[in-house]
Length: 226
Image (cartoon, rainbow, N blue to C red; front, side, top):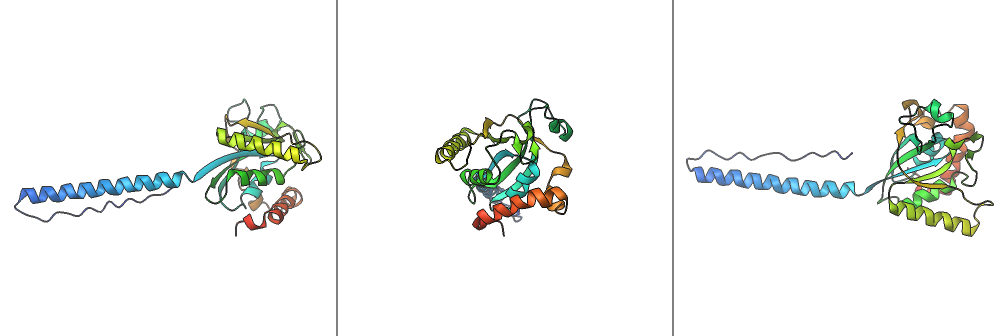
């Protein structure tokens, strides 16, 4: 959200017997305020156009969150659930694998600093996109590799990238990442948010998430936040 402070200072007209002079002063002030508001609107619109959103599922959302939080240009990362049929699902429901949701992270980013292609590169290089409904010891449809695109441009870029990866045989097995339109997104419970940063000494964080973060920082050294 862009915080905006408008300059609402108004120059008061000096007292004068001539009503015409006072009226002109008020008209000038109103015109100036309108011009200031117009300029502010243009600036706000321009700034808003630099913010985009991507939604990825790549196994446990704690891992995905920890990686993308460290990518230069990323503004926020929010863990949640997408792609299922149940409204406002709980973690327990999603974990049962019966709702159809995937654990995902919704990422807002500044497209003047990082673009969607670069996000995809990080996405595909920091998880195994060749295993169906599984990442390591985490298995189930909720852990599937998936890109939920927000617009047709994201769809085309993701599909093109996937085809190129498979043609290059970059992985021993074909990439099976699902590419689907974003139809819903529900934020996960608060205790899932910013999980790795707040629970770094926990076993799963040390033995599963930390290696993924280390891999990211090694491969994308020049793109890590400082």
